Image 1 (cartoon, rainbow, N blue to C red):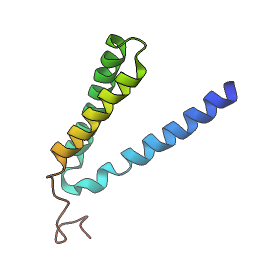
Image 2 (image 1 turned 30 degrees about the vertical axis):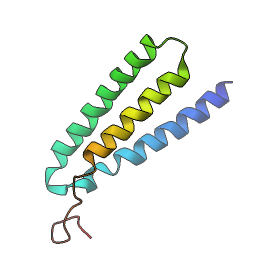
Image 3 (image 1 turned 180 degrees about the horizontal axis):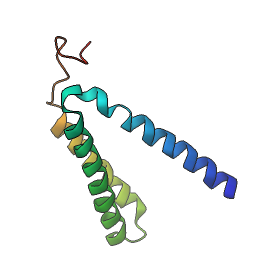
Image 4 (image 1 turned 90 degrees about the vertical axis):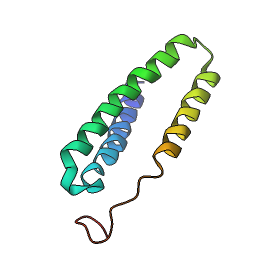
Length: 92
């Protein structure tokens, strides 16, 4: 069991690192602001999801459905943000 948990922790942290390694490439001139917003939204998401799990008890299907709907809504709300133009540093 310990090996399973250790392996899971390794791959979860690798995925987390892969996500956060993309942060400096979003907008190189506003690296601090983007990093701060990313960290703050990660903490906020952890708190919100913990509250959702707490108040839905053992109804895990409903909990994951709520989290999925929230994720889709947030992605749709942020989809209007355009990528970096080609002329700026970091644009391709």
